[in-house]
Length: 189
Ligand SMILES: [Zn+2]
Ligand SMILES: [Zn+2]
Image (cartoon, rainbow, N blue to C red):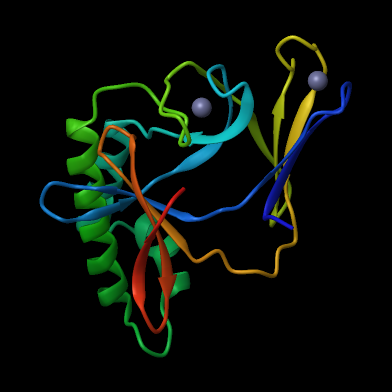
């Protein structure tokens, strides 16, 4: 069983998904985690994971707030403080992560892509969280059918150990299986 499933409430369409780690690999070797959502891909003719592209201004604002140690940024990150990490360490990590994300967003030119085939011909599903930890996405009209498609998170117990690298433009490069003993092993994906 995967981590998410989609189904159409009119026809028999169903799809199952896993949730591997996906990152942009930057020319300087930095990895930026891909923000994703469900989309209807016109090329795959399937519900797929697709990119969600944040606005550059929003990322820059968040970076500025973190650098300035604004209360709003500190409050959110204080939840991550634990036995082994001080608030200052959490803030420094977050600052670096945001700097890398801003650098990626500045060079990114195309619209959001399907994370399977790379097309930009897609319709995002509408995200809603009905309860915490119970995410849900909706597409009002299944193309060619007209029924409503919903995707939801499943209570998954299995950890997905795949890590997929993408170009900064959102095109798939290589997938790896992460193994504690062998490290990253390239796989077909
Ligand atoms: Zn349908
Ligand atoms: Zn596709």
